[in-house]
Length: 451
Image (tube, rainbow, N blue to C red; front, side, top):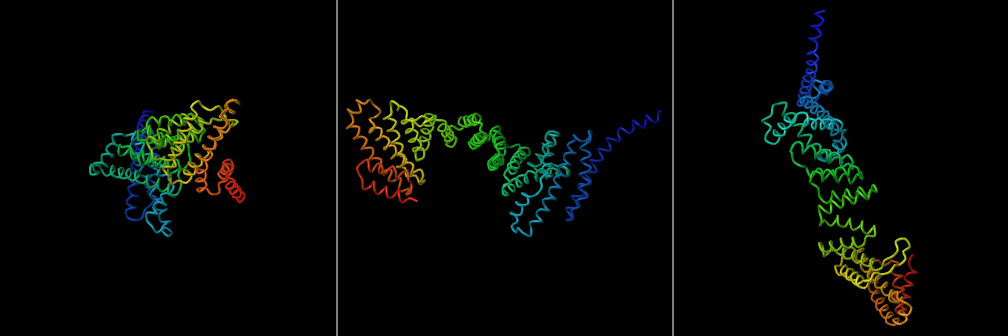
């Protein structure tokens, strides 16, 4: 009975020793594989043996939390990835002559499970053995001569993971696999932060750009928010999150992130324009106009801002029911607002924008405004019948004056869009109303000639 008890006690340390032996076996097999690679004859049987042993060690309570176990797992997984990458490169040699092009294509096509395993182990090491990882980081930044042989090999794998994560991201981007590219740019950013203790603005930004191209709202929101949280954001990040929330029909979240962006970057034109577009869509004309006036102050040579300011003032001066489109009572300062609209349209034209659509709209809107203003007076300004009769002659004179003012601007618009039927129809009507029947007939014939 005593012998059995002694034997039972003796077996306990042998189990732990067996698991430590698995780590040693993995180490020896990995070194044998690395030697075969140096000799130019990679022997995957060594690598498979190393993987089998390290997986057993990771499944055991005694060794699964040891930093050394995970360091070997990272090296073994990375070695498998390198083998797969080299296989892909050889496949491409007959068809892709350019070395860099071949590399990017290989990175884009190689399976990534082993690379991801290696990268995951690298990240686990930060939590399992932060002091060891600090030693590795110092070795990479201050000089690898301070590292032992095994530590040096792990440090070089960490360095390669950092570099190749970026290569994979670029390869995925080049292959138009934007969803995967976003993930790998993001992982590269995290890996670089782990190994340098510095924020990697470039790769996090590339992750956001790739996410936008993938049209994946979840990733757009996650990756852009990370840049904001890390305090390395730009207006682009807020704009991207705004658009992603709108694509999900989450207007509340969209406006909240836009509000934060406007606070963080009050003078950014894109964010201001996004907010202005939203105000216009919601019929909040005064809020939109306030933004446009700020835009003009920041960029006084931008014809678009003057055009939009003219349009908003024009709409405020001539309100309509949102549902029926029926004209509503004009504001008390109608004349003042119309004058402001006129000034803005004229300034847009004066700036001679290269964009033909902007120039066309500036001419057309000003001509339309004069036409509508003339119609307002011709209709008696909405006064009583007595007032209309009393002021009919004066009102008609003002109406004719504005009809004539409208014509040259609509004619200019027509020189830009020669086949625009609405412009032709407006001109035909104005020619006839101002007594120019010849021009009216000419425009009528021109309209009939449209296909």
